[in-house]
Image (cartoon, rainbow, N blue to C red):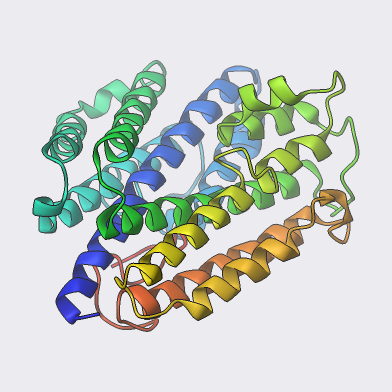
Length: 337
């Protein structure tokens, strides 16, 4: 792959990752805001809702460099509009737009227009509207825009290299964030690393379902008895659910195989091997993962980083640390230059 084509692939990949990340954070804000309304104790809500929210994004350390306390006001601002947070929703949308602009000739006009529109709308959003009643409309606006973008991409693009590089970015980001969500929520509900057992703070597990976009799918699969095990199985190993980790891995593998078959990349042996290995490690009997879901999900995040590095070598012509790509610094939600 030439350097020019590698830069194009890199821009497409990071465009999709940025869009997916914005959607993830908007959903987390929406669910956390709803949970905070259920708590009469503000301090307890800060500890059980807003601090875990920032932790899920992987930016808690960066948050503490500029904020003393984690509360609703500081967390919402940090994740939505904060200039000092390169992973805030507005930062993600801005970077997605900038990356897409560099490959605009490869994207359908409607895709570019939809992305540019949400960028302009969020850029003009009055900060004061993020008060107590503004989180929900803000989050819904972001999520509707992302759903429109996904629909336009999947409904109007040929299944060529452009579409597959976008697909790689979307599902690489999604797999990593689902694993991070499960890890942090598990430690919050069962801080002593106990095994998954029914009835333990199940309202927290149900909030996890909403955060993962899996609440309605779970209800349709429910056997009549709420079970954290079934919930986790849906988000981890259900290969028919588009937000499960296994589903994401399958989409990554499928796109890589197509890119190799079409001659768009020379080979993807390392990336495909890592995807297959990660999928095999995710047992269908989730409770058998050494009694510790948090440890297992931490391992999945490590695998996601390794898969990203392998994708970089196969598709973007750079190894980890190469100063290339709009978002080259980190792949898994850490602060980026």
